Length: 401
Image (cartoon, rainbow, N blue to C red; front, side):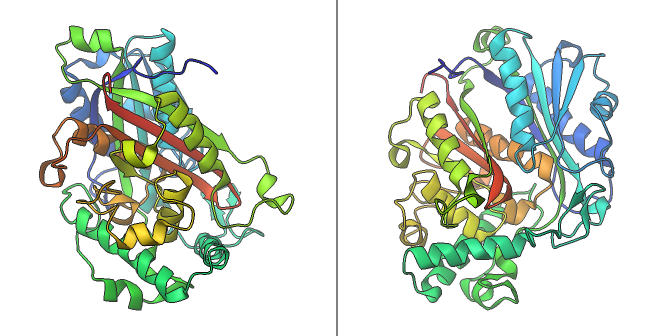
C-alpha cells in the first residue's frame, strides 16, 4: 500500500461563513467571509497562497463557471485555481486537492474553498425537474427523501426491527443535532426540538418526517494548508495535521446483482477502511474522538455509524438511544449541529465539518468544546443516492497522535 499522507500536511488556518438564508450577501461575499477568517487564523498574506481548489456542487446559477469566481472574489495573485465538483463531497474534494498539492511538494501553501449560494437557485431539496440546468432529479431514481426512506425500510427489514424503535432512534438523532446547533452562532437553525416534535412531525416519506430531513442553505468554508515544518516556522504550535483522505465512488455494483441489500452504503465502508489504514487506526470505536457525518436524513447518520465501524452492524439504534453520539457521549456526532442545523450548501459542507474538528482539536469551540481533549476527528460526506454515490472520509488530529 502507498505510504499515504499521514502528518505530511498541517492546517494553517480555517474559516467558516455564517450559514443560512444569506440574502444579505452574494456568493463572493460568502467566500470572502470564510477566507478573511482563515487568512487571519493562518497569519499569512494572500500573496503567499500558491494554488487553490474550489468546491461547488451546483452549476452556473449560484457561483459561476471555472476557477475565476474564486480568483476574483479573493483577489488571488493569478495562481492556479481548480474548480471541482463531486456531489456532496465537493468541499472535501477541494480540501483533498490542496492537501495533495502540499504533500507532493508542488506548492508550500494551498487554499481549499467550498461554497454554495443555494437559496438563489430556487432549489428546495425536494424533486425538481433539474438540478441547476443539466441534471435530471426526477428520473427513475426518484426523490431524495423517497430513496433514503427506502434505505430505512431495508435497514429495518434486515435487522428485524420494530418500526417504532427505529422511528424513536432517528428522532433522537435529530433532537441531538438541534440541541447542538442551538449552541453554534454559525448554524442556520438554532432552535432545540423535542422527541415528541420529531416523531409527530408531518411525514415526508415514511418513516422520514419533517425533522428527519436537512434543509437548504447558503454557506462557505475555507482551509489554508501547508507543511508542518512551514507551519512551525510561522510560529504555529499544537498543529492539526491531516491523517487520512479517502474517496470511494460507486461503479454500478449496487444495482447490478443481488449482492447489495439496500441497507447500507457500500462506498462508505470502502472509504472508511482505507482511511483507517492510512491514519493508522485499528479500532475506530475506541480511537475516533469526534465525527461529522452526512446527515442529509437522520436515517443516513444512523446507518453511517455502522458503515464507519463506530457501531456494530444492527447496533446503531441501541448506541444512538444510549447517547453514544450525543455531545457528552463517547463519540459525539454533529457536535456543531450537522447538516440538520447548518443546512446543506453542497460545496461548503465537507469543509464546514473539518472546520469544527479543527476548532475542537485546538480547544477553540466555545460553548460546544468537548471537556475530554479530542484526538481524531472524522468527517464523512455522501453524495448521490444510496444506490449510487460518492463517499469521502477525512481524518484530522493533533500532530503525532
